[in-house]
Length: 271
Image 1: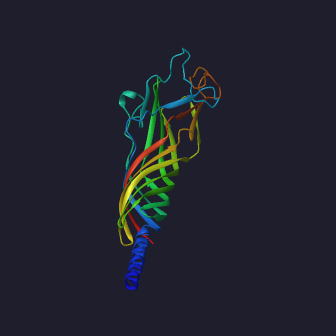
Image 2: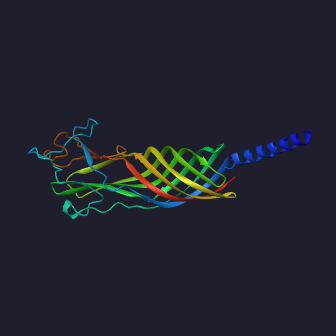
Image 3: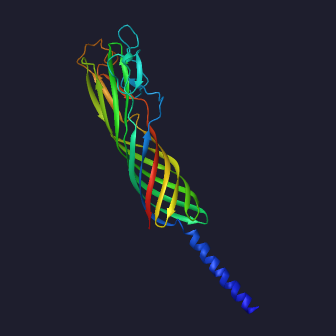
């Protein structure tokens, strides 16, 4: 009986040690890099909006002296080819997404919880154009410099595999620019090149000793619709549509955030 009790105690101790070791497979810090492809969704309803009375509300219609909509030719997603909408617009650029991250995970049983800080550089140039009856084009363009993310992640871990979801805040540095064929007015830019938003996604990691490899999908949404404004003002005549309502001019900006999805392949090292 004593021998049996001793054997059982040793067996339980070994099992407990194995269980504890297994429970800590994903506990610890790591560094990781990623390389993938990032894409802006097609079919976005990109428009330019106007504030003719400069009250801060971009819900006005620019009209000429006859009361007709000066921007009745419409808008397009992309950079205009000419002053005529019939010529079309260029396609926005999608491309490579690369970056790196550091993080830490805690494992409890099969559940894994953690946090990650990331810096990435998606290759995106995104434009929207408006067309007036003049005719003339007005093109707003933004290009991502970098995107930062501070996210939580939670998932299910086995000895060699971790399946997880992730989400948190994001911030980005952008370069804005404006182009137009209108030579009657002057245009003054008011830019804030930082944008804020969120990221959501999920992925899978495989562990080979200290090395991990995996794949991830991440959706990024940045609130950039009000970060860049252009004011159209004189020296055009008082009958000019941009200064017809307010002699100080009219403010223009695009009416959409910056959203894109990325598929990434990851390679990391766990400490």
